[in-house]
Image (cartoon, rainbow, N blue to C red; front, side, top):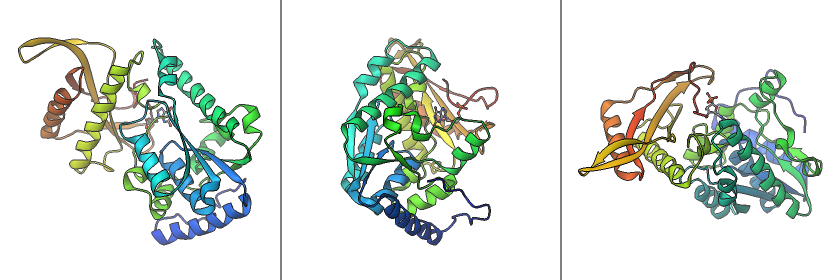
Length: 328
Ligand code: XMP
């Protein structure tokens, strides 16, 4: 469906405009798809979640969602995807627990580009395996949005049709891209009007390789848990302190080295946890968010007390450039 965003299209800035978009799109999906079935890789990110909610409204259980848990998601994310889509929206959702498979493939791999490559390839393999198991699915839905199209046209970033799937799978499907003419803020408006929870609609950006690029060096299960637990504490404290939705992106990183500390009179030898909190408009240039001292003290205290394997908390004061947002 090669729909273009008209130059003069009104920006979706109100609930009423979002609802009108939804009505129109639901009708268009029904016309395109009819009684046939649609497949969607549902990560739980804003774009795929909004696409899922739109398609569920249009075709109900003829949408087949596949949620792949690669073990690199944030704390509570797979559970939330299942709760929101399967339990609350009655979605036809296939949950794939691929945690061991990903972590086994990543074991001992310290090179950042190799890690990213393995995660991307493995994701496609797992999704393609699920797709091959399904009969009678003619469409593949994607959360492509307008900036993806602009970027790929400008040659900034390759935008893969059918998400880089192998040809035997990709060729089987016709694409359904119901939010491709929308900007990110419009996708959020539509998600809100579809009744998705705020923490899904206003979610901060999260890289495809997930916590894998924040568990710097070769990923081990214990260090990955330290990233996941410290990230959960950081997100909880940002929410409590009214910073959620105000700071553009914030997360923790646990690098693969240890230092000496002392706890209850005994020597420790554990990892540091690095906090990164940044603001930006275009992610090309990024400034560092300066947190209040009391919040920093509280975060240090909680992370040290609650996260096994951490004996030091550091704050990253580096803008981009010279540092990138993520560590790998
Ligand atoms: P960097 O580290 O390049 O990050 O300064 C800029 C923004 O992009 C996000 N990021 C990714 N997003 N897939 C994504 O969808 C990825 O592989 C990826 N890597 C980085 C990063 O979180 C930041 O918001």
